[in-house]
Length: 140
Length: 244
Image (tube, rainbow over all chains, first blue to last red; front, side, top):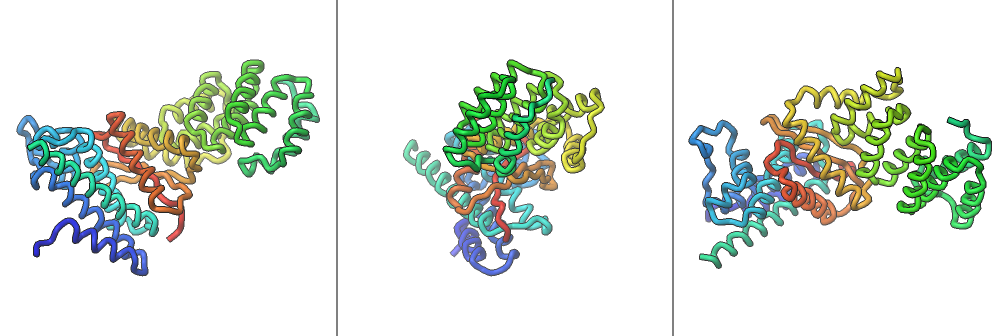
């Protein structure tokens, strides 16, 4: 069976129950990736590499996806609720900062509550993505 | 400015444990006795300032603010009243109102609020407030006693481009409003860059359950999108102050 965004969330849930801060960091990181892959479903995996004027976007994949959702273009291109798509984009962007802290900033303490809240935020984001996709199906 | 009378000083001493704790440590009976003493003080602005302090410490925000405002109207130049008023608003987690009050104090050149204003401005990344208070302090030759940490933040934010500074202030203002609305004591704030040109503003709060933290952070996202801040380069979130 192919790996899905849910697999990342399963790893995050498994990690958070293990002893040691490295596992909490892993939980935050995996929860973020489950959000990233869940959000990608809204754009059928599409992440723009050029802006509206046709200029090449220089930022990385993650930023381009959250920007695409936040600036309303993903909602326009994929017939999504604009406000909900923006909220998903901002939640993704916020979780990305936590993921960077978890993976790179070893001097920053990551505690269990913050790891659990990132997992819950990932679950909530997945619910919102599902709701948007369901709403789209009903319209079609 | 008239020197406080002995009675006023006695009352301030009696309130010291409460002001240190940020809440009124007196029984209701003791509070009423103290209020009677306060109301018998001849200088009305001092009497009102003390009543405001007692009421705010006791969580009676409307009564406290009314009394402080009357006091300030009567004697707008009394720096002690401005400092006590601002400090107790911060202690009671009324951060939005405290910010407005501190800016009013700076407008009126109340240099005694300098220390508090610098710390407050740095905590909430309000560069305008910091610049204004530094100008005021310089004008009045005010010497800060503990400015290393706030000035360090000021200097680090100052290096950022102007639009990012605005984004940080906007994100922090959303957090500040939610903290006030929910009565959340904010322990520590932090600015972190992600290495890709964006930053986060985080605020540590005492929270012990996941749902509360998640709901507060969802509220930040709702409010930021509501205000059109989602395309900015600063995100914001609450984090737990608990240790690992």
